[in-house]
Image (cartoon, rainbow, N blue to C red; front, side, top):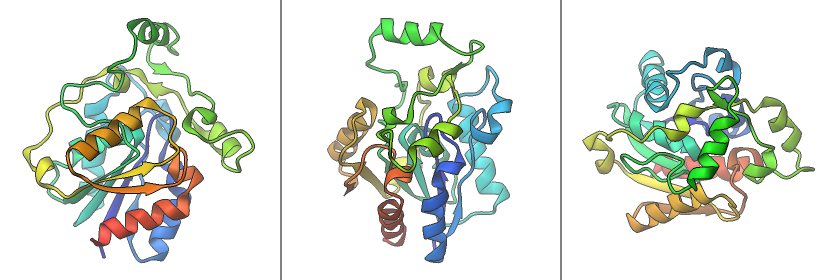
Length: 233
């Protein structure tokens, strides 16, 4: 059975995959859902060096230490970027972007935002290093949804460097991997919308789920089913 590495998005941690991972394990998959440096239960490790390169190194270390093989790597939202970098590891055989942002070499997550908006965000940083977490409604988990308060208690500030650091060059093997995009049909965020457009233009396999952007929280059963189907393909 294929192995699956789940990579969370901005402000989140490995915790967000709980209900997806449970379902995948029940189907016999080996699933690993780490938390990236500076987030979740690893928020205390935040430093000026916490960026894309460090997050890609986190994932490479997990692949090595867990001795994973035949891995489908799944990156949600921001997580598509470090996941794409980690696809350089020979254990990775399939890349899945779960409503992810565009994966474009040399482009930062803040690409296309007005300069004044980026500077306003920079001025609001906590300790000069991290951007405070917005309300989960921003990720399409509305107030009153069963996952809203659960997420609100757990989101942590996002390392700023991750948001403004351009994506380094991808390994040549990335373009040879089977690539798929699982889209949230009711996503309200510009970054994932651009990611979906990129995937469609490049001919990636496409799957759609009737949910808002934060699929691991709002559509765990459908998300697990989509990932399982792609991992078996």
